[in-house]
Image 1 (cartoon, rainbow, N blue to C red):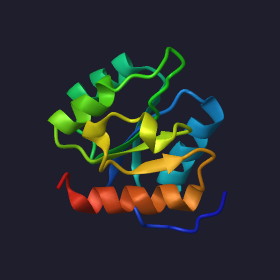
Image 2 (image 1 turned 135 degrees about the vertical axis):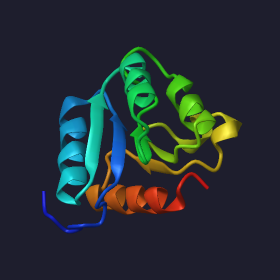
Image 3 (image 1 turned 60 degrees about the vertical axis):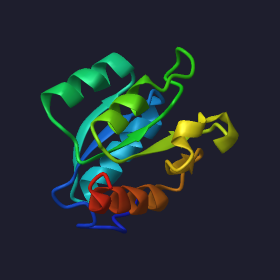
Length: 128
């Protein structure tokens, strides 16, 4: 993995929710190399929700299928707390509920530079 975006996420705390171990580890390393902090990674919704209750991340990247089926519980919680996020998923956009129509979606297999660019955009949006 290259450090193509050093400093791109300076001071940004990113919640990472992904059950594919290697992808979660890659995203964690990517965020850290770009200067960001990582909350997680978590492979379960309950753990991610608990982390959000303890400390509010600046943005998040979330898989919708964490091995127990598709769930949008975490996405709904992020919306409720005005935390900007993107889905990191292999699912087609048509599989997402209409309420998430405008939510960014990074398709697996993900291009790692695209993840940094999207997280930077999300962090600068401040939940707007």
